Amino acid sequence: MKLRRALLYTPGDSRPKIEKALSLGADTICMDMEDGTAYNRKEKARKTIAIALKDFDFGNSEKLIRINGVGTGLEEDDLAETLGNHPDGVVLPKVESFEQLQWLSEKIEEMELAEGWELNRIRILAVIESAKGFINLKEIATHPRLDALIFGAEDYAASIGATRTRGGQEILYARSKIVMHAAANNLQAIDVVFVNFKDTVSLKIDALLGAQMGFTGKQIIHPNQVAPTQEAFSPSDAEIDYAQRLLSAFESAEEEGAGAIDFEGKMIDMPLVKSARLVIERAKLSGKI
Ligand code: COA
Ligand code: MG
Image (tube, rainbow, N blue to C red; front, side, top):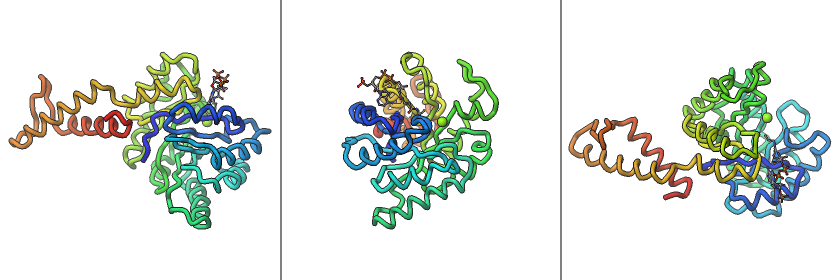
């Protein structure tokens, strides 16, 4: 599974923005037909995305599409006009039930069979952004075509009647819940959009908070946000060095039969070893080692 540290939304009706996105080195580019595209530009977005999927070179960036939610009346046409050009995955917004994912998965499977494509290659990423979506998260997160859970904080806050604050206490419970259900089902967890795109210092703080909470990546909306976000979700050189030293100390002690050791003045046992292994795994996936 590709590590999606930065998932960049690009309005699907803007060919210049899609072209720009190709040059940014983002892990993932998500061409949007939902809220990033005005209602009277949906058709233009479908056509532009179809061309981009067919003709543009995405390099190492993953290419996703975001369709409109199930039940909007737009989702069938969104898929019909774009899926045939084989995106790497589909982001489904406003997910509130397992059945909605199943509907999308069956549409994808029909296309895979009709085109003779490898089955299950096109993945689904589900945006959870309503009270109902959270109530049903336990079932939603078990869908076999799912790769990631994405947290839509603005819609969620509106759905529960919360007011967004700087500290974000009003979303903390839901934000954590995404990480928990993702971890339990071996999915990636993709954190909130930071909308103030000119303030990259605060973005970095928010991205680091997400990484510390256990998110594997973050949704972003502007070129300025690519580098700081990818950095926040990659282990630092110091973290990698520490993890490598810890693992080698633990492995030598283990051979001598010790379960817990004194490592540079700290007690180290299995949970910390697991965390260190995760740091090494993420360092490899981010191309740092
Ligand atoms: N993807 C690709 N390119 C983008 C981009 C994006 N998300 N956001 C901005 N750019 C480009 C601009 O086109 C501009 O390109 P240029 O220098 O070649 O002209 C450059 O980056 C600088 O952009 P800037 O002028 O600072 O911003 P803007 O006023 O053009 O756009 C937004 C601001 C918020 C409208 C824009 O960032 C955007 O549309 N973001 C995505 C919104 C979205 O998809 N929302 C739904 C998901 S939450
Ligand atoms: Mg949304």
